[in-house]
Image (cartoon, rainbow, N blue to C red; front, side, top):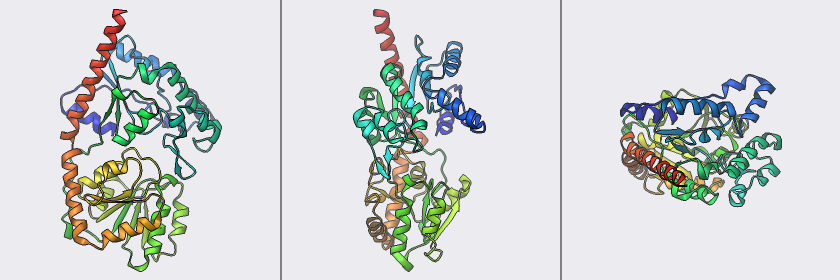
Length: 387
């Protein structure tokens, strides 16, 4: 999404400078890399100095941040102090208030840290990588920047991806008056394949991890039996072997395709009749939804978190109870047996994309966010001078 937004701005005549760091810098360094990442997460003075130098040299109107973890740290927002550069943060997950980034524990949504506005539950449960030690740097980051008022004083505008995410983050303490909602977009998508040319198959695209709820999808296919359509799973992750074991008795109805290049993934999605996303966690905005809508593919998803903000039950998709294979089967099988309904929802999915998720629809929203951030920065600077 960072790359798409960068190109969106450049194509419309804006000058974009980049300051980036990549986790690959430390990933191959073993224990030393882990230590560097842990120490950088709460406050990285070198990243602070680098961004400060860039702001002083280039004097940008806006500093738009997509991710600070682990090497940049939220210290970079303090680099814009005493400058006219407005700061914007896109909230791709919940890491500003949740050490795990995804509010989930033991297979269920968990918002203890959000409700309590505290990192104590995260430390008690070891929410990041099931380790209290690994959780400590992230919990320190959250507590430190809550204490410093980084989010309250040093970020001029926040971008949430859905209204649900906005609600949760405001409830967790982020300033509501600076919280804007801007969805993902898909620049230059291919045209949808005609309905009659599509294969009678269902797709899942995503990480094969506990949070995605794929075990419930496979169980639903097991209950469906011989009448179930072919199911293709594109992606990889820690649960893959376990999920393959679950699917062994399904007579080839479920195929694990692993990671696939983006163009191939899009081709497979375009030729499908249904995309199923059985997540059991609070998603931000799965990018595959914007791709499915662009390609006119009906989406069936868990009735959880941001999903109902994106998928309209009975119009462009089908919602089911999260973590419930029986309800997943009932809703998906009910839609699958009505070809005309699926075709209508497919057309509605593309209509939703054209209305909300194109580059043309997204650009003015982004400009409004930038303008609001600039105005907030000017107002705060004026108050500071007045004192």
